[in-house]
Each structure stands twice: as structure tokens, then as C-alpha cells.
Length: 329
Image 1: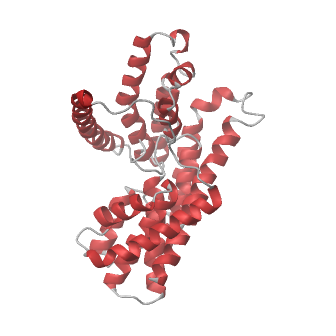
Image 2 (image 1 turned 180 degrees about the horizontal axis):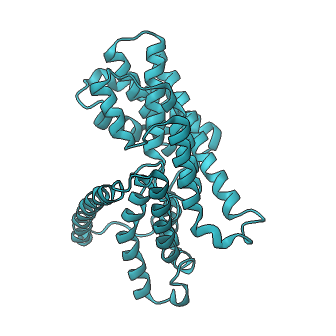
Image 3 (image 1 turned 45 degrees about the vertical axis):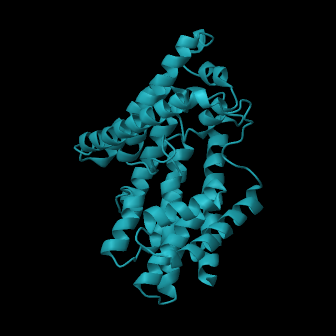
């Protein structure tokens, strides 16, 4: 119980550190005094971030980043829940560079890897057995997710459903302790800076139910499209064996997509906030379609373009050598 609290707090601190580092890099590149002078570079920042990440992972850590969550599951099932020490900080650094420079990926998978690695290595330090090592991996993941979302329930559910599938009810209390500690650290350091905040102006009307059902069906289809397209791009781009050329090609293709759809730049949470607060015109105004942003048809086309190209941008970011996850995209 004590270890779950400690690991949750450390994982929460890691989540805050990663989030703030990304925001700091983005602020320096986009909002500082020199940003206006180098405004044309915004399309190439993601390329620079990907190439930096590629060279760090290849020449310093000498590892392939791969898919974050599946790596953790592989370590649990095939490596007796032993995760190398380097992953306690390597994913934080590489994802901060990739996403801070505008790579179209998410922070959730890297921070889960970080939290899980912290849990595994603390368990090894305390000479715990396989079952307890696995449980503390889940605690690290719960604390990290709770810290980055400011939501302990999200951390508990994610960890119990994804990381610790098959564990009994006994794991619930340590996960809850870890998630609460991770969330408390985040609240203490960042305040109530939640990802999404909005005021619901319209009450729910029963006659709107068919629209919600339609939304669910469309979302499911988009999820299938996203998954299949990601694997398709991964298969194609990994045929380029030279990692530097692969990173260069992926970064240039990403620059082209961002030129037409700047909303694809970075994680994408800022775009969601604009939509939630009915600031759609501001989002379109910052895009290639700014000349006629008042036209509703243009906005619909613009949003459809994001749906089509965001999966491509995310797959290019990750598979060309960048570090990040696919939850936020």
C-alpha cells in the first residue's frame, strides 16, 4: 500500500514534468519574441523534432521506440514484468521533443511507459515477486494517467482494464491509492488545470437520441479507419531501412499536411478546446482556409479533412521515428 502511494506520486510528478516541458517548448517556438521572425518554420518544426528523436534513440539509447502500451504488455507476459531502467526517463525526453516541436502524437502512451517502468524498477529494488511487480507496474500506469488527466478514476479504470487485465478485486485498492496520489501531485503543482472545461448550455432532449447513436456508429467506423490506416502506413514506411531518410520523408510529409491543416500540429487538445467553447472560426482562421472561414461548408470540409488526415499525420510522426501515442489523436 505504501509503495503504491509512493509510485503513484512519482508517476504523477513525471506526468506534470512531461506536460509542462512540452508546453514550454511549444511556447518558446510559437509565442516567444523570435517566433514571428521564424513563423515559416512552424511547418518544419515537427520534422526537426522527429530527426532529433531519431538520432537520440539510435545513437544514445540504441533502441526502437515501438508502441508504448504494447511494449509494457510484452514485458509483463514475456519478461516477468521487468522493464529496463532507461524507460523511466527515455520516453519522457523523446516524446517531449517530438510533441513539443509539433509532432502529431499524444503524451498518454509515453507517460504510461514511464510510470510503468518506475513501478517495475521500484518493485525490483524491493525484491518483490512477479505478481507484486506486475501490480506496481499497474500502479505506476494509474498514477501517470491520473496525473496527466487530473482524473484518478480514469487512471484506475485504464490500468485495471488494459495493464492488469485478469487481476482480481484485490488490485483495486492499490490502484486507487496510486491514482489519487498521482492526481494530488498534479493538482498541487498545476492547480485545477483540466484538459477540457466548458459550460453546457443546452439540456438533453430525448428526441436527440438517434443523433447520439449515429455519432457512436460513426466514431466506431472512424476507429477502424484509424487503426487500419496506422498499420498500413507503418508497413509502408518501415520498408525504408535508413532511419535518417525515413525520418526525413515522414517529417516532410507531415509538414505538407500541417500546411493545409495547422490544427493537426501537436497533440490536438487546443483544437478540442476551441470546439468545446464554440470558437470554431478561430481554428479555421488559422488554417489554409482562412480566406473564406465564414462559410459553413468550408468549416465542414475543414473538419472532414482533419478526420481524414489526423491518423496519417500521427502514423507518420510515430512510425518515421518520433515518440508519442495514439490516444490523444
